[in-house]
Image 1 (tube, rainbow, N blue to C red):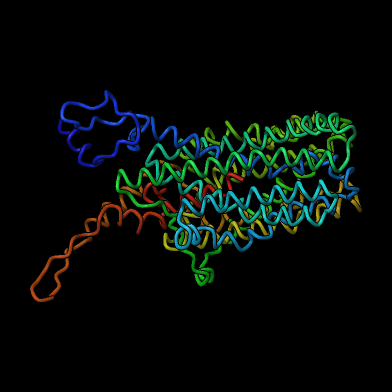
Image 2: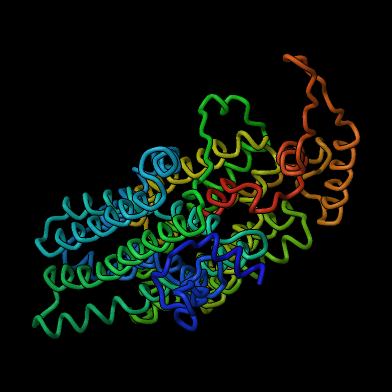
Length: 524
């Protein structure tokens, strides 16, 4: 009864959804139906559904060029270098926007309006991209990919900000896992369905060509419109929850100070090098992989698209599982080393053997998922908490810079030297990442081995650090009119102040900007 009275006092006269049991005597308000109550799990599950589909259109359309590589090149009479520009133009705006996306959400638009605006950029960019193909104007397609990129990465930040605003603690890990799976689902569906869509449109139009290509891409834009509708529904539900529960809008918590870059440690720069040289051997490869599998292994276009999508298919279920294993075992550097070695082996198989490529691509999918789970959390272990926003923003920025530059280089290599040289180039990039991992191990070893500690050792260090910090805290006295005792630092403050720099993992609900930023690139 006390809970009911408390809920009545909190909800006031809100009666927007059907009340459970209707009105009682004297018009007294009944409790809300569970699906309409923002504090109830069932309502938050509904919110989660819209939250997951918020980025579906972005992930679906990101790899539209890869799914239709042969059609784009043939219908528009392009070479591979021009084709790869479509990926470069997506990455260019995010070299800067990685620093500004969180700021715009926190200080300018707010999470609700910001999400709608970024969803609009994604929709408009995809429509321009499709219109460029429809009218056979490649420059217009490049403009579309640029506009699409403006919204794509920032929308991922908004999606994660919604997550940390609606879900806390252990729930948040599951939510991020579901969002990651939905991202992979969007990429996988795109890889395997867009070729079929193109063939059906070609039958309806009468022949293949740039008109058929444009119509197919315009159909794909429907997924972006769907995601925009999800953004509008989320804005309504979040506004309603704010009014009913008297809570504030979610914020990314990003604190970006470019002057912090000069204080970055050698270990952090090595992590940046691993990030750049590893991912440039993944995304550009998938971007042009369809023709590679057709030419080397004599696959049909449908078979090539299927094997090219296996990385995304595997990472959907594997990422949460591998993330759980890394959390339980620790040893992040060791896991990163294993992932890089496995990726190098996969590229060498693709380059120098004619083994069934499903083997190499499956290995690539597992290693890609493992590296994402082990590498990105390490940033929080080597920088103070107040520099996390800058560190993750800088890491994402140089990753996009690397992807843009390497996409151009990849196209030139394929046109001039062929796919064998391209695979050797990817192997060289992975070798640079491998040398950085070895360097990171020794740098970390000389500083005490915090990055490669076991989970048990980290838990012990966390406990000892918290105990020592609380023991050393002494209440202070200040004179201001009369003496007043200062309250000791809270457990929240102690955790954030000490543990982030000592290698102990912070809970997601105690570091919202870590949650938003660390998962942003992993979800790509």
